[in-house]
Length: 227
Image (cartoon, rainbow, N blue to C red; front, side, top):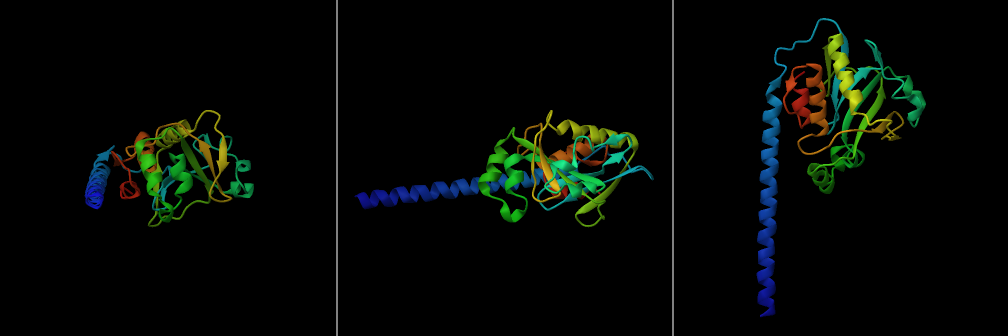
């Protein structure tokens, strides 16, 4: 009798697990479809890049996207906020550009590449987090390519973009060691969730500037495919 009961419970447990896995896979598939559809619907549809202006870049490492801007342009000077002495090696502060990204603290610190993505980290971030960071890399001017796209903005568009990025920083933000000697993390504002990912933030920043981009951009491809 005990053996039969044990087999019965094992069967119930296996059915429950299979059902839960199936539900999760369906939810992920629906999320992927929704993200691709949202990324394909344009905001600021009439926008076209000017012949001259401030050249910025959108870059991706396959997981996170970032916006690369000059340290000084059109009256915007990032040097008082993002200082070389915050870096593990201040010499990298001599580079001319900064790459900005935003996201969940745990997801950023634990998943710099796809090979380091952990299901528990993804699920925790998807549920929502108030603990967010701005990630800043000090870099030379990027060379456009498959994972780096150049965009020219009008001065007023660039200033709107810069204002959006600056307001993402926490008031009097603390800074934390980055992945290497050239990057650093800062305390940020905003809530991270499956609806507002690091890539959704990139799209939001570009939309705020007035750039033509998808209405919801949760994945790197939904950002880069516009440029």
